[in-house]
Amino acid sequence: MINPKDTVQEALLKAKAKRVYLEGNLVKILSKQFPAEVKEYIEECKTKDKQARKKRLDVTKQVQSQNKELAQAAEDNEKLMADLQVALKEAENLRDEAVEDLDMMQKRTQFELIGLIVRVALIIIVGVGLTTTVLYTIAMLANKDTTILGNAWSNLFGILLTNSFSIIGTIMGVKYATEKK
Image 1 (cartoon, rainbow, N blue to C red):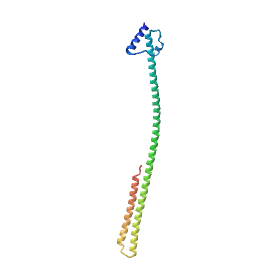
Image 2: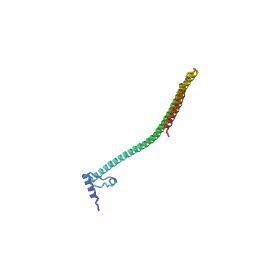
Image 3: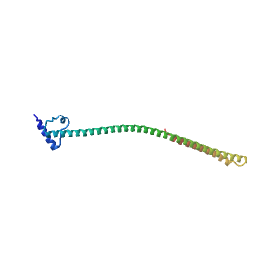
Image 4: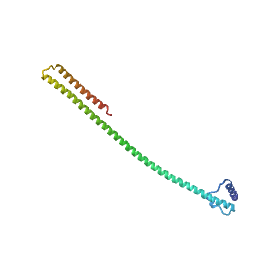
């Protein structure tokens, strides 16, 4: 059988040698019928137990506070991530709209440029044709030799016609080559 006096004496020796004290509910229920040295030991155990409990309580409160802060930070982080996803989608939509607008402007500019080139080419062709026709008509009315002028007039209209089709064909080729499919 275990002798309580021996146990208490052993606890006293451990407290002095290794600074190990009883703690918890055992300290609260120990009888006060022990000698003065044991009573001092029990009081010191109670004091150390209160200090240990206070430290554990402080640590627990600190951990709970940090957990609250971490939970709030995680919630804020999730909200920011959701906001970032929305902003990213909005930015992608705006980028797509800008690319579409740019493509439309390029096509409109190309179309206007092609129209301008065709108009200028037609003006030149008609201008050269009219000039040559007027010269040929003046030569015929003046009863001059029109053999060379007639051949030049005929060749010039053939060249102008060929070049006009070449220009229009090139423009159409460039137009369809630059389209995206």
